[in-house]
Length: 134
Image (cartoon, one colour):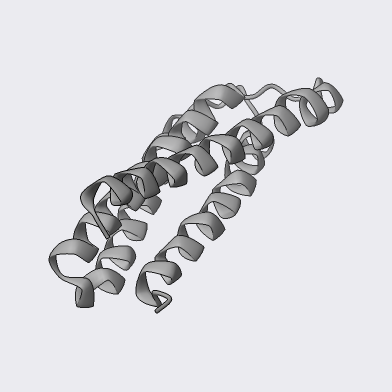
């Protein structure tokens, strides 16, 4: 596979991720939030989805980079990067737990439901790297 095709493949993955982000953000912002007006959220939805988009894009970029250098170490890289992403998620949510005037339940749910959907996306991509079609 040429270098240009690999770049286009990464661009395709980022485009798929952007479409997923747009769909999830639209569902969250226009269908779910109007019914949850009684709750106050610490983070606005666009900040949550920006966080998810950036972390998943970075994870996929580093997985692709690792697969070019040491293809046999992709699984280790995926596990390490997933742990770093979990730490980043805890750091992202940490102000919420110290701010006592807001009930954190709604914000935590609005963060972790997309978190697991993005985790499914990145895991399916990691499986494609680990089991390439011949």
